[in-house]
Length: 148
Ligand SMILES: [Ca+2]
Image 1 (tube, rainbow, N blue to C red):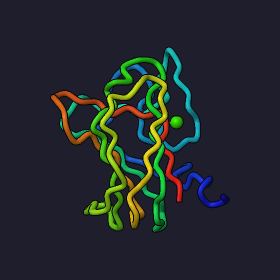
Image 2: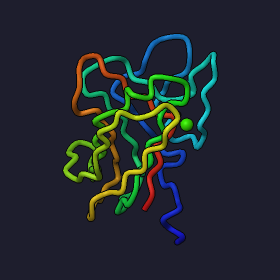
Image 3: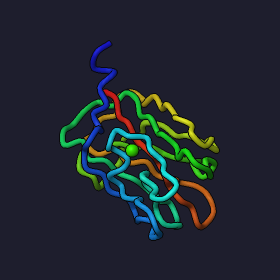
Image 4: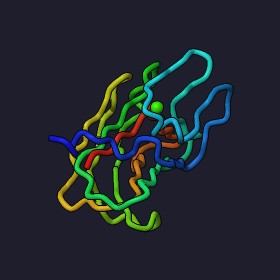
């Protein structure tokens, strides 16, 4: 009760390995805006370019023991692009030794993936990354929520 229901990622700064370039809005900040919107013209969710091992990283601005991460998949199509996602935590944003968990997938369009972290998943930075697959892979999330 209580703290488990606070999404500490909300409105925190986010970055991603690259940002898809096309008509629309694909920036990393859409992972933490608290909204799950998907419009026909203008994407309103994160979307990397096609690459190897794309990732999205959130800076929580403080160190927490992380209990649960929710990956809100894209809502329009291509939900199966979410697969083999590893979520890790880091104190410095460089080394990510703490593994929360892995979602093998493939995900479903519109799905929210609840990932319950391994014990002692401690960090200020939390990164979701596709760690297996063919080139190109895309990481696209409408929200990444983090609970402590
Ligand atoms: Ca969002």
